Length: 363
Image (cartoon, rainbow, N blue to C red; front, side, top):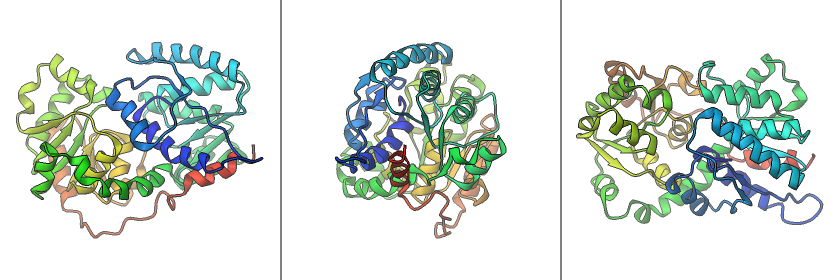
């Protein structure tokens, strides 16, 4: 693993693995952290807060281009696998760390297990789409979170014995950590900006922007910041390091005047804000689903999403990130969503990690 979404998924699965304790069916987990997210607020904080076991290996590889990072990771992961000779390598999601791990293990004939398999945005220019498609076809077991994901894998010719419908470990994380976040609300909000905003009980919009196709395109980034500045509610924006750097690089700081900026948050604080927000606006794959699991409507500023179920049931809506008017219209539409509208059980019962562990014990 190497990035925020993977840490959250691992928090649920590591708990289920630890519960196997000792005996013939016990599983020993050794975590390899590539270092893809190397900022303490995007990495170390999650391990401490979510009780994830300390990594046995930390490669410290991050900050470079996709090709450079993936190549360096591949070489370093191979060295670890040769030394450790694990029974299997488990990878999460769709990052460069995911693909590097899958490639290294597959070439060494070590079984590859892919958590969150079968997602498709059908945008082959998207690095995440490239990573997830390649990983699924390398994987010996594809742990699919939804029926839609299963159907995607089947259409691509992946053998049915390699596909396991488990539900989504993000639903596990919502179940496990949602109540904990509420119990620790006073501590998580502190006495500063967050407490002032939430304590006033005024509706607010929570936004996250970090994808390269949005932050590295000056026109798109300007359009997104313009739309957020004109949003119908006060906007809280935890600022990703890449986004902060690109805003400065493109000279877009004047567009931040109406936004409340804060540093990146830990998972518990984000869960709490997602739960309390009237609307979430994001380009993140994970955050759009976290918003749904916390009962908050979402606008995704992308041309597509891998979580197509959320569009079909109305809890998420796509908006063109190059068009401020389209984004504002989508915000207004989602704010009109009935907060009592029932959320369909799209992602399982919140015990996907246990289903994965049962399959691991059969290896």
